Amino acid sequence: MRITPRKSLAGRLRFKHLELFQNVVEQHTLRGAAEVSSMTQPAATKLVQELEEMFGVLLFQRGKRGMRPTHYGEVMRRHVAIVLADIGRMREEIALVAEGGEGHIRLGVLPSLAPGLLTRSVDKLLGAHPKVRFTITEAATTELLASLARNELDLTFARIMPGDVVEGMRHGTVYVEPFAVVARRGHPLARARKPTWKLLSDATWILPAKDTPMRTFIDQLFSKNAAFRPRVAIECSTLEKVRDLIAGTDMVGVLPRSFLLDAARREELAPLKLRLDPNFAPISLVFRQHRELAPVVDAFAQAVRAAAVELGLH
Image (cartoon, rainbow, N blue to C red; front, side, top):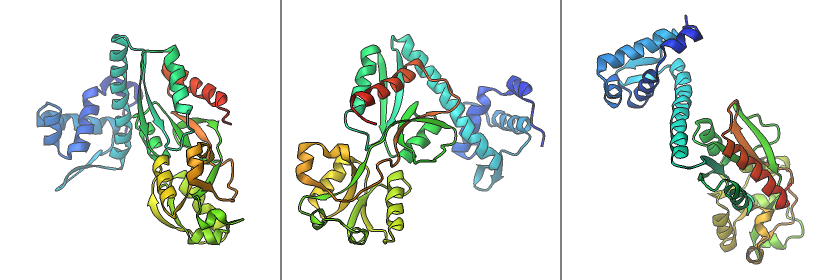
């Protein structure tokens, strides 16, 4: 295998190579990719051959079902997607600044983010940079980190489990918040002086999806206390929906303690007399590693940390 040296590659590799490569991955045929790329099929064939020559490997398997990326092609696909996203992002940011804006922040947030933190952080930034534009995406940690890796987000809030190393990312803790197992007021478990894990394993639960930090944490607690994992009737991470479902049924679930401070919620919900690890999966701000942050993104991260202090989060 002979890969073109980096210096020579910089002189030969063109944007049209990358764009065509992505189109072949999406269309699965040279004919379709050539059409999307506004070029002839012979020209598209030549570009793919040039790419494979430059990297010294076969990038696509050709077969009856069309063209599919090889193992090498999959590696290139991940990097090409990021490069093209970076170029598109650069264009958008320049256009925004040319129109008088101060930048665009693509932010990921968790459904369980402490009440008031997002509002206060955004308000702080807009007070100093009133022409900044936000796009906010709400999802679970796994989805947000995947979007960040694809350069669809500039930064995201996420729950990082202790000891987790997120490849290609850097993160800093914003605050740690305790959780509570919660039932409706009047639920038999809410009246129990000290609910056992056996009783909890017999209950019907509403929990976040599998492989999320919270779901993993709860599963580990049941295993640690030698109890069978409970039946999960509903998978949901949206706090208000979880609140409504717990308040109106006999299901139990897990909610941040700060969410239970509101008087109306206290009338509906009862935290069970059960101690959970208060340092579970702290809320962190996560960024892509080895990437210089736009000034407004860095300013927003500072605003988040200042807001967390003002709200008494630790």
